Amino acid sequence: SETDSDARSFARTVDQRNGGGQVSLDIPIASRSKGFLSALGTLSANVNAGVTDVSDYGALSTFGYGLNWTPFTGLSLIAAVNEDRNAPSLMARSAPVTTIENVRVYDFVRGETVLVTRIGGGNAALRADDRRTTKLGITAKPVSSLNLVLSANYIDSRTRNPVGAISGVTSALEAAFPERFVRDEDGELTLIDSRSLN
Image 1: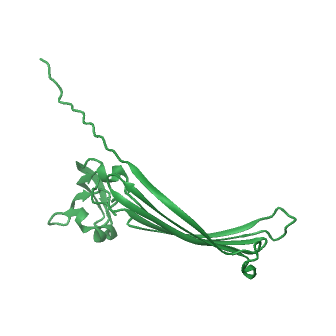
Image 2: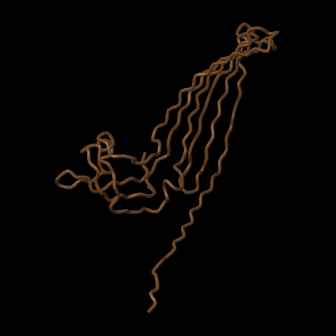
Image 3: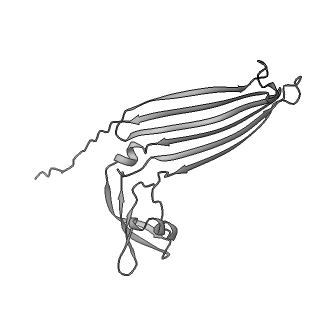
């Protein structure tokens, strides 16, 4: 007798289109070469703004501003701030939801290895991240006759609502995302929802 295997293949197509624009404006404040407020050296400000429309997500904005200052020849300073938002990836939002039983995990809360049901896949409720970057820089050429340039930069980058996934079972994670963990009446872990989250 012949037995036909019930193997099925599923195809899923996702589509995303991005469109947008950006504008940048440089504003001269002082110029030694043109004799305008020359006591300040050469100083200019810049402002930029933009928007990106993600077809299946919405409009996301970008905004930045900064200063460029050369108080005298051989020394330049820069200060800049930039804020931008980025949509979660297609996979993080649209991957099929899967449920896998009998996944072995270590529960750091109780100090034991257990078999759980793990939910994985995308999360359509993900929010865009918000990144703010601040940069301070200085460049100096102390001796004009030498090919010697000294530079130092300080960069502070902070992200709100970054996208990640549950990667372990710790008391801190469970306290932060209690809805992602299910325990039975004896306190044994039975289910983990490891889909992407903010």
